[in-house]
Image (cartoon, rainbow, N blue to C red; front, side, top):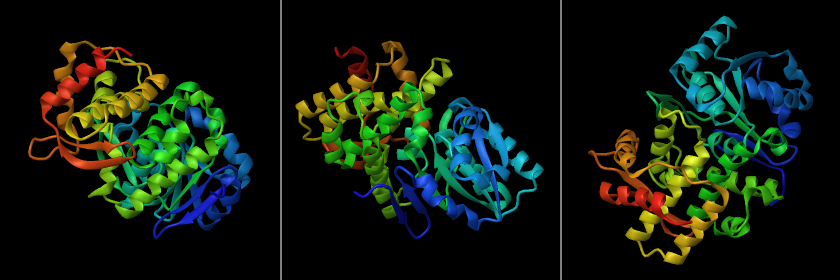
Length: 357
């Protein structure tokens, strides 16, 4: 794979790899006005990098919001709409979302709904954003502590994925994004799995290649199934239980990240996969060992399992009061729309908290 590389689809252009920001900044010259959306972290650490690579952007107005999943809500959206109104933004204005998944999710949602739609470009600054959140047109916010309850499928006009921003991350954010990289390896990319297996994320030195492979995996899926009616559902592996765990710990004020929750969800859902399909036990053990190498287990007791299962009933994949999962048929091969009995879900959570690592 030549790095960096560019890709133009019917609706989105992508620039991915080292130097992408420098090589694609000229694409932003096509817009008569740009407003930049940041949080306090990306304003301090990433905005100077952006200005260095694209000096013309120093003239742009900046909207700053508060960082963190707890702030990805309607109140934050209302603040962004107010700021866009105050700055006299029009439908010909471009919103440039500079940040991680919270910024690209909420910024995309605000842009897609302001004046019935203004254009936006995502420049993800976290590993999670680069391989997942910034790609695919999912925008939205949390509602009543339920993940991504309100949102739209709306594509950005462009995505610039430049690993230069990874230098600003702490270890916790690297780890969070790594769970999504592992997900692509498990559901569709055995070559990526073989590249990563047995390694702690801090030991990886070829991130440019890893990010490019993972990002291309997601681009390939969303180009084929933009509105999540078929194969794109495979990307939800680990997310049904993972989102419930994330909501549970956000409610209990325990610190967590999206990646930590998805890692736990992948352990549980790999275990369910092994119960439902001809999934080899040694492959399950290999997956669990790799996840445990990179993520600490959540601590909760058996009495909380029923509440966690109840939180899943707000999942967007619920139909006719039944939970449908994306499962692994084998390493590197996933399937979707698999109905799972609640008792099996409870058993997977018991496995998670009781299994000796």
